[in-house]
Length: 431
Image 1 (cartoon, rainbow, N blue to C red):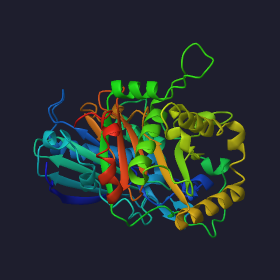
Image 2 (image 1 turned 135 degrees about the vertical axis):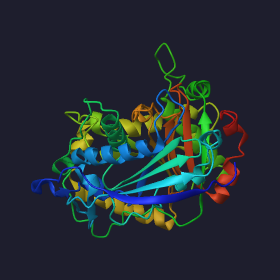
Image 3 (image 1 turned 180 degrees about the horizontal axis):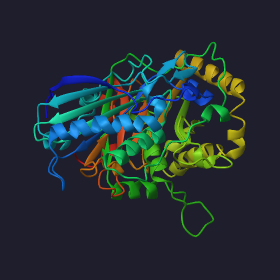
Image 4 (image 1 turned 30 degrees about the vertical axis):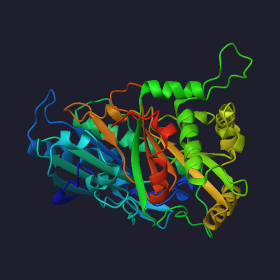
């Protein structure tokens, strides 16, 4: 469809339903929080009106506000303000809350959603973060369906924590007494440091970024896992990569092939995967532990990995890079200065153009489709266009059928070439 019109009709500020105690009002950021880019992580959940439970739009809106206020008591840092990239002032300043009318039917939009238009469903530009931690926009379609747009500062939360909040709010809204509350305390595990000389905004760009959504069916993903399987293993069966590694290998290799012809041996190529540290720590942290509990596995891919018959080499390199982030590696992360110096050096080389970097992050296997606010689960969940080039966000397809959506951010010139690549498109489902 063409351009959709979304008009904000009301604004409000939602505060916790009970004041945050004085001893919790200074929420320290961790080293892992400090080094991440000052952007919002967006997630947008779409709900039809014609579900099993029909609820008046006004009644639904009032209930969302009330239950958000109740939820913020447990998620109190989200109602505060970030100060100097060091801490959150948790004096209940509140969450900006917008309501908007969408001048089309829900079915018209989600039949072929355009990622470049999803910014209309969230209240702020994703790089216009200032000091706000959380912002909400509830969008009402002509049919009564709604899209709940949630933006949480990456200074406070990773993808897992975003989903923990959304599902926590949904649990309160549907009157579920078994809401999973967040656990805090990351700064005790990864103490903050002086970031002098390091700019967390490195990598963000003002270039025109195009975001396109590529859908891979379960059968295509299975075929890719076979394509990148290691046939040389001594085991009885070939070692197949995970869904994410197989898709990462395809996307990176096709990107390099169509934009560079082949890998430039004079340039350093790197592939970055965001790795959830919770289960890798010793002892492991629970999934509801809140904050940026991620680090990046860096693969320096071999050029041979693009050649026929050697594709598994690239996957093996990714696997090895990710496996290095184990309990022993994580124990050294609190030595922040050492890791900060590495980040500074890398940022400088990226800025100079010496390094061509490609980043992958994933919402897959997080329960984004479990967010039932009392009128059913979402029929579709989307993200947004982030101000980074060469970034891929993976999200499970709706229906939990094993398919995956890849939201790919490239500069306009590269996207023009990439989206027409025949080898890539042979695995992509028509939308």
